[in-house]
Length: 621
Image 1 (tube, rainbow, N blue to C red):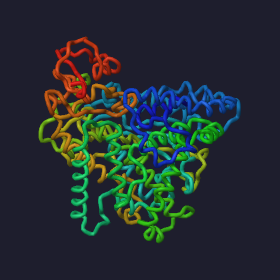
Image 2 (spheres, rainbow, N blue to C red; image 1 turned 180 degrees about the vertical axis):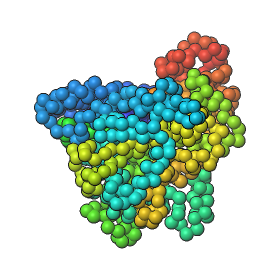
Image 3 (cartoon, helix red, strand yellow; image 1 turned 30 degrees about the vertical axis):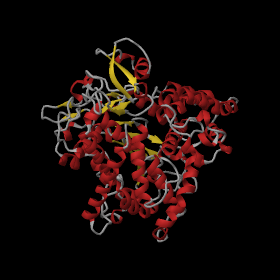
Image 4 (cartoon, rainbow, N blue to C red; image 1 turned 135 degrees about the horizontal axis):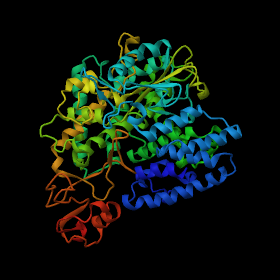
């Protein structure tokens, strides 16, 4: 269990929990004063604090049957370590006759998929780079469909054309009840314990059709294409201009960028769009910490038997409980939702839930699990392609981004090649669970489970051409409109409930505005920014089609080499750029403190540099 929290805390580099008092003695308003320890020594502090905070809970679980095996299995799932630990857990569960939320084949199958990666799991083709094989007629095959993957009840589809066709069926299918979306986020079925006060106990994706028809027009108006605005084009232009102003003002005060900053940039825009004129009761740092706790608990605790999970959640201190934090958010947001949207919601029927509660929960979903998660990931990925050393992957990534490239095209290609959302799941057939069913054991059979693999569809050479496996800035913008499924774009049908049953991401336009404004600035300022030499650098995982990094997102700093800007835009070239340091000359191998000591500790493969020089802190000069 400790591993799950270390993954979250290492990535967040946020709350210094070693100085946080007991939850009963801590006022929420004080948390903003406790965030952001020094990044490099924070992990050690967090590690000790997490061990201490969880020791009581672990001791209390020591007498629980199968707890050691199943906690190890959950940690293995978080690390994509394969199904072997889960098999030990399941063996114990069967012997002790414990209840699981999900079918055993689903749990082991999902873990095997994560360990094997995209190509080995979903493709029959032998091409190790793409999984697709070119046929004599010029088409490609090998990754169209994978039956019984990741478990016996699931069929995965990777063909771009098939994925788009099935997405188009979603509005009518979910409207008439032949298709059901459960409490699922990508490839994860989520623990239902966090969604209290609404039924079904689920993220909005799993809401009843009646509830979806009430809330979707509001979400479209807040985050989407503004089609409900009478003067659509003027309305959208004003919104885009506001996002550009937000981006310019936000970036002007930054000397470094990392995971917390990408989240902050997104969170400010989401909150201001949702609650205009209101003071945010939580800081961005708090919300990122809550997001990471919530993700760890809602996704990986599903692997535990119900009795162990329920006891663990009851034992966790409030400050480490996603359930407790979710309630704090609900209590803070609900009055604002009632004030701003209450009159409109009063006209809808969200039974058995209250519509204000339902929209409050949907907004929390948006901030923690939807745009608040995917947009920061996409920004980090795009910046990694722009500034990191990608030469080891040959022609997979461009080694020079041409001047004058469209920021929107750059962001859309980032979303295509490194999509933050990889899977769109749903259930179908004559026996799909009713929309208000909150019981997981009825999920798999006899209903059919479908995986639309967006990540693979975005690499289908039948749609994107023979260079689909490369990050290319030569594609016309029109191709993204036709073939992109990064936002489940094709899941739209204005003839079904006036568009209120559309299932594509309602925040697509806001996401594109945020991404375009961000890269408009970063592309023009690229010579000023360098990868942070004091931070771990991500790597590209061809297995998972993703940029991966233990601990955090891609971090960059404004270069201070030879004055105000980096001599070269990338720190691994001739002139190093130093985080918070001024480069004035050091002798290779001289050791010392500051960035050099951090490089020795965290990036020894890049040290020493082959240039003469010394990096000293500004205050030392």
